Length: 159
Image 1 (spheres, rainbow, N blue to C red):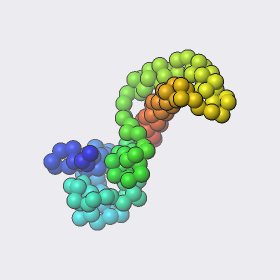
Image 2 (cartoon, rainbow, N blue to C red):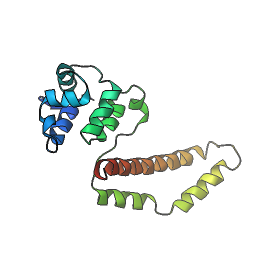
Image 3 (cartoon, one colour):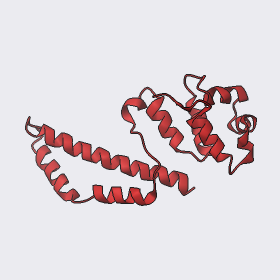
Image 4 (tube, rainbow, N blue to C red):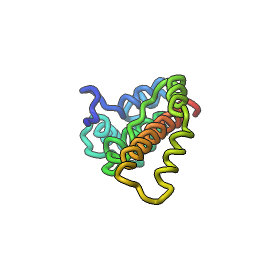
């Protein structure tokens, strides 16, 4: 997936410009680069996708300074060689919608846990049990993603 969202800037630039609504110094690359501790040319390279990979410490600083924790998730999902295969893409979404999704995910968890215990109690996962175990793991992954999205929302909005 390409980092470029529009021809004139990527997710990092958009986050900086959005943050500029609350900090005038972020309106210019010079001001932002001073706060981030990088050169204006480096920031330009990051925002125009000239740099193949932004240093992780810079992404962390951007996320903090721009109040955009979603940048770290984006980086992990799209640029980190390990994260590309292990980190779920999280959406910043409405808190009410997240609460509903989590509530629906929690419906009748006892039956799923009971079935999980039945499958693993003998220490052997039979050929017949594998599809059901895979389904349970998938449901737990989905729940975990919803919880992580809630954490992302909280990081952004409860700061």
